[in-house]
Amino acid sequence: MTEQLPKYPDISDILAKKASGRRQRAALSFAEKLDALDALRERVQPIIQARKIREEQRAKTTRQQE
Image: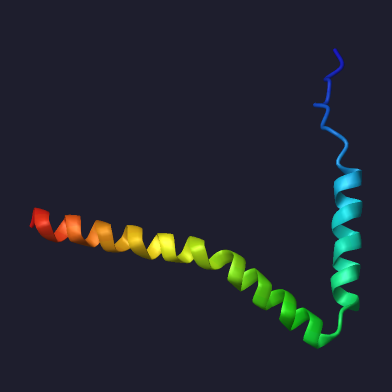
């Protein structure tokens, strides 16, 4: 009886794109890396604000229940 190994999808193209992206980011100057970091922070800001609002609402609900 031959045991059949599970077949996984080919992800070599995904891994190649990730490696390419890493090389591109590594080639950036320090100032360009900082600019990219600032852009990421701006994109995440709405998520952080929404989280704070949810935490405040949860805290209000908890205090009201006590």
